[in-house]
Amino acid sequence: MKIQTSVRVENTLCDKARTVFSKFGLSFGVAVNIFLGKVVIVKALPFELSIPSVELKKKLKM
Image 1 (cartoon, rainbow, N blue to C red):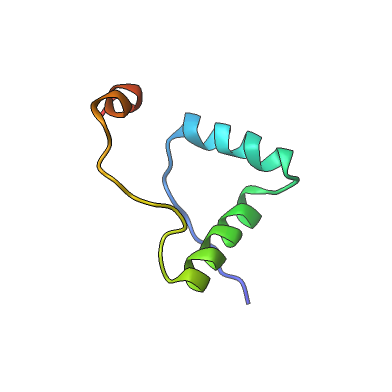
Image 2: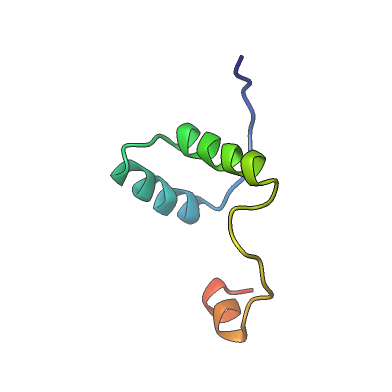
């Protein structure tokens, strides 16, 4: 069974992500399901988290 959900994301970030997904032949929904599946398998986020550097904060305008 599938459910419908809604999330708010930054428009530019979403557009860029969709471009990457399309290069793999993935829809946004399929990409989200892959991410969620990986989270369940590893019982963690599938990437390392760290405190952003000053340079990264400037690029992200934090």
